[in-house]
Length: 341
Ligand SMILES: NC(=O)C1=CN([C@@H]2O[C@H](COP(=O)(O)OP(=O)(O)OC[C@H]3O[C@@H](n4cnc5c(N)ncnc54)[C@H](OP(=O)(O)O)[C@@H]3O)[C@@H](O)[C@H]2O)C=CC1
Ligand SMILES: O=C(CO)[C@H](O)[C@H](O)COP(=O)(O)O
Ligand SMILES: [Zn+2]
Image 1 (cartoon, rainbow, N blue to C red):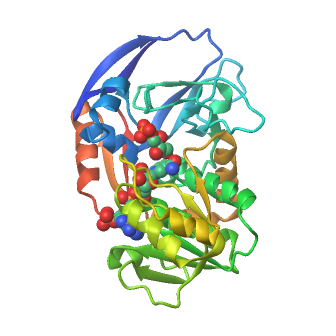
Image 2: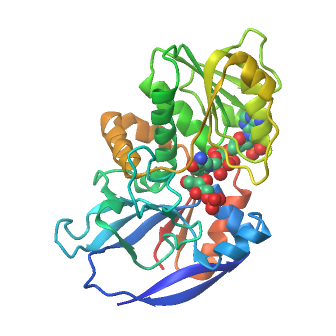
Image 3: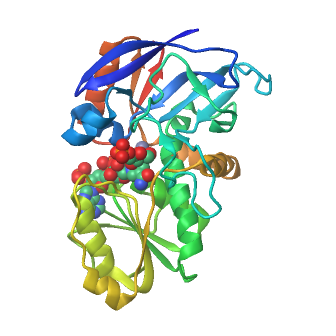
């Protein structure tokens, strides 16, 4: 069958390409229904990813957050119409110690390899996870971002000491909101403190114990473990602030992506014996754990729905551009594309 793939060819410019795909393969065919824009996609769309990376990775279809419906399963295990979340990481090897998303041989969609902006996505059998039939599709669309927080919490749990009285989460955007919410659900007895730059954003974090603007933190505040969900240059300030507020031997999980290296206070990392935990992307197990989380705490999906920002129906390349432009000017939440092209 001939598939249409919508690829970014240069900043703000998409082109359709046609790919022949044999239905005789073992791949499952999924029709995307709801796609969600990540900051990483925006860095390619706007060209801020840097010349070298742009030259190396383009042309490619963007988007690694999305859901769809199964339209063809050669083995018939998935009934046609089954709603699934698609896993963007594509491992080519296994390792007993290194998770699939850290193997250098793995491919990741919309980072040098075509993402979900296609008429149909062809996936290996373990690269999709069924979602609850009745689930809000606009929330389900950004499940991948939720798996990022789930994955980093799994890493934190196996690497940090067990005193978890107080968590500090830096970032008053999408990932900071998701991280704060999951920590509060998983550790109801712990205090969760969210740190941000903008009061009206922090006002949405109604479920945490305390929120602070980063330039107005009382001296008495201290935390056992930190999660940095900021990215860019702001991550430098956030990491250093968390180093200052952390109790010795705590952990700092770093999730924010920075285009350039940032300067951090290594002297105090040493003096306090801090454990730094880098966390990037996620794998199939994190998607399964996230769907299980939706089932265990159905109210969490309602909280996540406050992150639905712009919704754009996509029927043409022009409407893809409109979605990315709206996302750039939106001050809160995720931009979702209803994929009807
Ligand atoms: N590790 C991974 O696998 C993944 C990483 N990411 C990365 O995580 C980062 C956050 O993503 P997302 O939440 O979607 O982005 P957002 O832009 O929605 O959130 C970042 C927020 O942090 C705020 N901020 C800036 N500086 C500080 C500071 N010093 N302290 C506290 N908050 C601050 C920003 O405010 P303002 O806008 O006013 O500056 C913004 O509200 C990005 O770098 C993204 O690329 C995303 C997905 C996966
Ligand atoms: O968003 C992400 C995962 O959800 C990662 O930040 C993204 O994959 C980084 O990719 P790149 O190296 O292409 O910027
Ligand atoms: Zn992402």
